[in-house]
Amino acid sequence: MSGASQFSVHKDFEILIDKVSKIVHKLSGNKLGEKQAYMVETRIKKRMMELGIQKPDEYVSFLDKNMEKESSVLVGLLTTHHTFFFREFPHFEILKKILPELAATAKKRPDRCIKIWSAACSRGQEVYSLAMFLDHHLPHVDSSVTYKILGTDIDPESVKVAQNGVYNQSEIKEIPLHYLGNNWAKGTGEIAMYAKVKNTLRDKCEFKVGNLLSVQDAVRGQVFDVVFCRNVFIYFEPHQIEQICKDIFKFMHPGSVFFSGISESLSGLKLDVSSVGPSVYMFKTDVEKAKTVQEAKKAPEVKEGRAHAYVPDLTPEVFKVMCVDDSGSILTLLKKILGKEHGFEVVATAVNGKDAMEKLKTTKVDLMTLDIHMPEMDGITYLQKNWSKSHPPVVMITSVSREDSDVALKALKFGASDYVEKPALNNMEERGEEIRTKLRSVARDLYGSKAHISSVDKEFSKHTEIKNAKDKMRIVFASISDMPKIKKMMAEYVQPQPPTLILFEGHGEIVEAYSKEMAKEFTKKVSYVDSATDFKENEIYFGDFKKVYPQILDKHVKKPCSMIVYGMMSKHMA
Image (cartoon, rainbow, N blue to C red; front, top):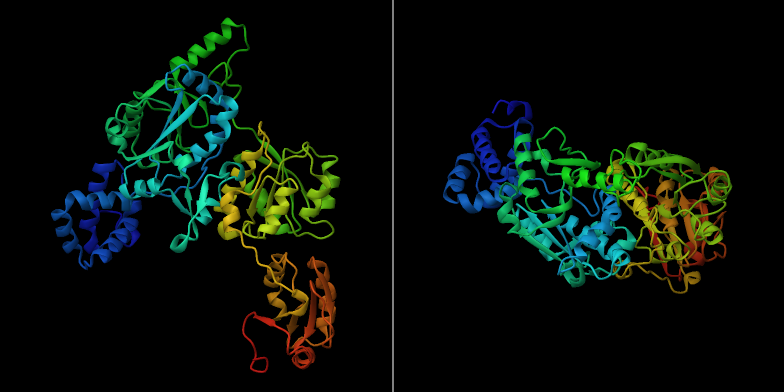
């Protein structure tokens, strides 16, 4: 393997890597070349460790003796399964636009059922996303029409996960709230941090092991109105993609719609389809028929990117956004996340609720992102004062965790449509996709975007109440460099809180000046103290450790007290 040395592949593994790569290519069509050599080696080594095998030639021998079972394991090990709920949301927007015609066509059939195939469905997120989406929108289009979704994947282990329908809480949080609804139930015991899809949704979904190189076996004669085959063609060669598509098209109704991954164009292949949107295709005969219908009705000529007389435009809209946050760095990240290449344009920013109110008077926007904790006017107060049905949909983007039920409940009660935790440089791509999805999901929602806390959110929510907070104390030992962490911690406390003393060592007289400077950074009252006074509930006090702490021990020794230490304590403090 010529690329082995480039990717630091050990020579002893070259023969094994070549053998395994050929097996996977033959079974799945996925071509593993020089660029994947190191990845293949790493994953094979992990598999060898699981089996207790140390040498490459020993694994070759094991593979030869257990070829059928082990090759299946290798396919699952070396094919990519990265996915998430509502991935590439613009495709769901297009599905919503064509849903009326899909329902009208299905209604003419005895089963009144729209049939969808999610090919290469991985662990099932795409299937359940489609199910939640249709459960939300289809009843508004035609309540007499139902749907059925088939999900297939080459990896048996991924199919088992999909059939089980259990996902980590962190994955469930990515689902837009009005699609999340009451479709999920929180796990208990060992799976307390997981949620399981309810039978009302799962009963409409079917999962099977299926290989795109053998479409007939995968679908077993079923015919579909919609096929999602996304983010899998990047692993195939052009002639394979062409053949797979031709095989899939045999099992699609006239008027059906085919979705490939956003970055996976079918242009240049010898296929009888026309592009009707970004990576969205229909049979050429159907597109021509739609043009003929429009011409007969003397309708405007079909423009590029339009498929049917009933489809107004399959190009996703570009939405104008106002971002409201008092952090310049967060506003910079949001501008990158919400760029024109993603179908957004940040046309205005504001540093607090008052600033947003003024800018909305002269700036028209489609959507708003809103922080909670800001000076002068916070996000909750802004919603209370300004939310109405005519207000642009609002998605909260805040450092306060969604599990903090009080804050989430307030934001949603006063008009917010969804809730996302703030992005950072280390998670910008992942969090950015979630932000874009949730913004697009509430934009132009014909059935209203008012959200509600889902049943699974209520079950996951943390409701911590400190009883008789005024009779307790919290002491924080820190340095000035720890202040960003302390600010974030205090921002997440929304219940009545005990008096909080932040004690510094070695800063002397500057603590008083610093407390005045920091007072505007907190939503709670901040004061400087140089003695153990009568501390008040929900207030923050800055003080010098040497002056204040001995007096606290003397005056408040009987009070229940929690202590938080940031960084390393000096020997004197300890």
